[in-house]
Image (cartoon, rainbow, N blue to C red):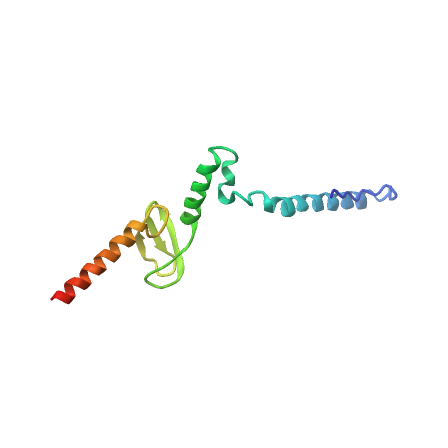
Length: 130
């Protein structure tokens, strides 16, 4: 859908025809930016920056890691969704300014959840026996 509004009937009003030509060009440019540009990384998402390099399987794995790395998590102290990763394994809450050590790419890892539940179970057994 290429539309250029360059009119040849108005020869004397050169500024007006130039303006119409520029408006047509801007319309085409906006069409490609918003219509065509929004589907550019529809399938690959954040890993579109890697193009066709590194193979599809590795890019799928990397997509999962990068999405969890850039996501915001719920703070255990204030309850708001404002915990973001600052460095590898360092997570900070923007609202209550607490800094928590967690996983490299997500706030809590599977092994940390297992350890936490095991410690809670052992504390429960210890308090029942005492």
